Length: 124
Length: 231
Image (cartoon, rainbow over all chains, first blue to last red; front, side, top):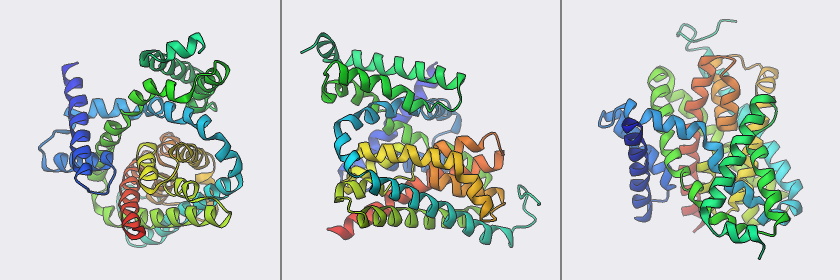
């Protein structure tokens, strides 16, 4: 339990550091700054993976709960969504397929030829 | 003011109701896998607010306290990124390049399509970060002047598209490498798509969770750059 609370405290602390640096004018979202700081701390060994693992996995597993209030907020912007339904749907589908194919086909081209023998490659 | 609206003035009421709705939604999702937990949790809450005439702002006094935890949850993404990054070290540079290309194409095509179809600035900007995980997408959308609620709906739908059609579309395009599939799903449909790979292959799922975290970071970097250019 104490270990878990230490993890929560670290995540909140790194988030606060991100908020602080964001306030100083760095144009990245504060959560992303906190992510980068924690990643750096893990890479340097300043923070051990098992200090934050439990708390991070719990928050990530139940992240859906954290989106609920914002999603409920759709009722406040519902008329905008209705008016822009076509633009939103088209933008969603076009952009989804574009990202999927660009990354997937690049992966096919860049990974297959040069890394035939790497472990993890599935031989077809 | 209705009695419920009065109760909702206390943030604890909204928090308890939201957690209860989430617990019920999770139970429904365990029973019928096709029920998306987010949708199942939101519908009764939305209905309650509409029927009892509770303004969203009243509900959100408690709701905002839950949303606040998206910050620490984003920080927590460093854990899968670090864990899987270590295992993928040998091809990390190439994977990063693919995710970067995917992020550029995703942001540009979402904005362009929405704008061409007449969407106003706040709506087109809300579509820009729709491929990345919700907490990052929301912040990026706000930074760019988009409507965050619309972004959330699009992020959710992109996840569902990825989980349902991602692998079949990649197969049609002849993509069979496990890492390429993982990168494409993680970059296009974040956590929801990643979760759908867990049962298929450990390699696909682990590349996918790395790609999802990386595309969140790249998208926010690109958005920051875009914001500088817009000024």
